[in-house]
Image 1 (cartoon, helix red, strand yellow):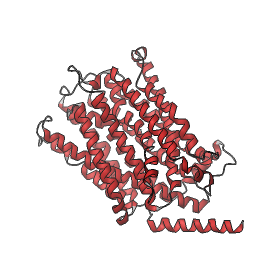
Image 2 (tube, rainbow, N blue to C red):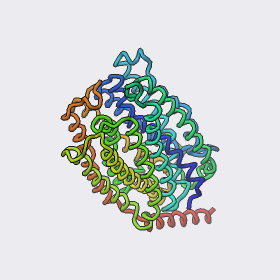
Image 3 (cartoon, rainbow, N blue to C red):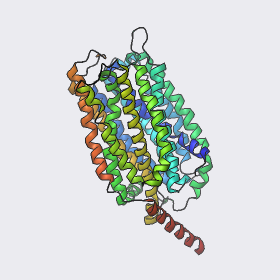
Image 4 (cartoon, helix red, strand yellow):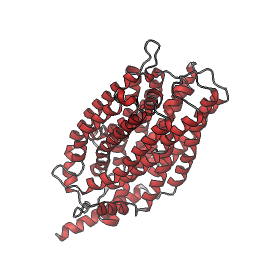
Length: 480
């Protein structure tokens, strides 16, 4: 059992990446297109370009972190140096000056610059922090516990932060919907900055007791040559694991679906369901609190009954089935008007089911990555935790590109134009928004389900691998 203090100190670091994701999944597309007037295609393309850089930087940072040797370990120097610039990046992202807003080219450049800035410093914190999980514990279930804490804080912050903002920063005032008031967004940038500074600092300081383990961990990466060729060799070596290659394919498909959901959700809630800021904050926050709590409390019993691979399969099946009931009911006219309390309640149930299965899926698959680092050490004699997590993050971000690209193009195709407000959008446009959501989500989830079924791993296999590694270390010690 991992101590509660360790789980908390490590777990709150998961909020750092979540704050970035919250900014892009909830507010950026709405802010830059519907509020500032930048075209959906341009905005989606810029976000996609920044995601490409985000993905490329992941394995670079991962390899550099694996190779670092310092008195502060391999992970903490990167984490500590990321905190200040990352917070400042959120201020820049949500505070374009008026002269920039008035010129679409300058506005596009502003979005690109600060997107690259935020994503770069988020990477230099998140990748080393993820790698730290495999070093804190090698226990099969312990890794699920500690990553569950990280994912729990990640989901809570990703949802509660924008939900809080929708309630306090973006409420309707004097008949004006705060989501379409450009003067509100700099406040959200300041809020994101403050939360990043506080939580990242607490996680970095709270996990400093594990610095010693980082310095002395056997089987570290070869640090003799830190060159571009050496970094590429590190990346190629991680891809030699068959299970890891399959996990990459699964993650590409699953993350593509998530990218579409996260991009279009705020627009569907705003225009298709005509929910107010307060109602959206309820749908985002309450089901997430319940879903994350339920997932954390059931992962232990489920993990003792099912393998991590099986839990991922069951979760994907649940996500697919959950996509097939709520929206068809509305499209067929079987639900009351959007203002009816029943509609809000059904969306609440929909989000609760979604958050539960998504949480179980993500924790289980991420824990599998930590287990595969043991296979890698047995095969190659190297500990490259950051390398593995960075590759997964790399392909996830490349897959996430589909979200803003698909979403931006969908907005232009279905005719959701700048200046439109809930209640004034043509019915065919609203239906097009739902069809775009379904077509972008269900097919990739089915592909992910097929690929994960081919991954071969279990608790017995992981423990056998760890036993062989321990025996090899003992032989080395006896020969010294």
